[in-house]
Length: 359
Image 1 (cartoon, rainbow, N blue to C red):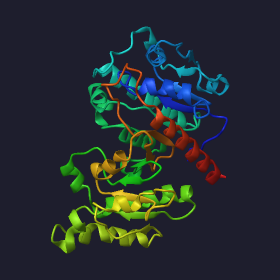
Image 2 (cartoon, one colour):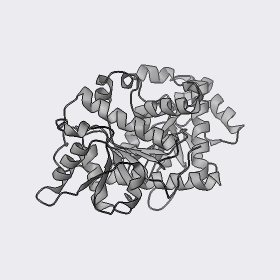
Image 3 (cartoon, rainbow, N blue to C red):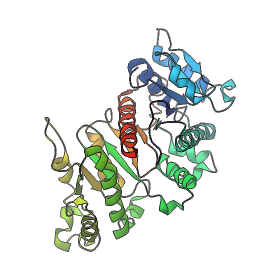
Image 4 (cartoon, rainbow, N blue to C red):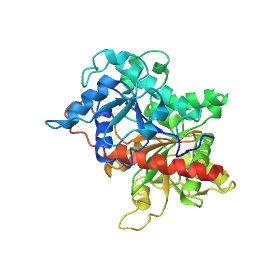
């Protein structure tokens, strides 16, 4: 298992060069020097220099320092943006703001592949990914068109590194902020396919991954609130039977393995019950949601500026901001870097925990 080490840098991928990723990265290096210490960006030099000018406005842009090796990030001074370019593409002009393109998707995908493999090889401590655009990733063609987003691409890279089949490296998405944690049974699929993905095996696997991921963070078994699929948790089978035939049996099987999970709860109230507020913990440490929007709507409603996306089940630490590429804001210099800074903090925390558990 990959562990974090203070003598290894942390990689930040630039995301889609036509979006806000490069700008929030520059803001993070400007506004959060402690969180960005020993970090470097995997991306395009010209794109990061343009982002630095956008963020500076009428002021002086942060200098972009070009690295030859990732390890050089450990000796970089503060208030600069260390960038490791993957090729000589920086001789080309940056991609236009807010426009889908195959080149932008290719650049975003290449950065993720390089950085993830560097973490898997033990050369880099952890990975924080700036937002990529899923449509641009698809336009890039093979191999990226096969992956709906970061999570699936990282799963494939981790499986290949370990010599495993894809289904032997299951992963889950967790969205977290100061008030709520949510893990999803399925991610980027249609709603029809998401409903079909609510199976005994998928729910049980999700519970086990959540349990093992949060156990070292909390120092105890997490209290997992399980969201039902149907209104009113099926109302005894009146509005659907998945709670009785699939979800509750999966909970029972997980409990036999030491998982502290609830019976399926009405999805319209469970997130409120799990929410921590006014310094008081919620009823649950995390909610297992049955599909993407069921879980992400309540987290994002609380504010995307503090939300962090964590991929559970990987043999590496990966976090990201809880928002997309925001093409409409790209180039304005107004994008908020708070979620990226939170992602950096969480990556460091998770990296330390992995190091301690590996001793």
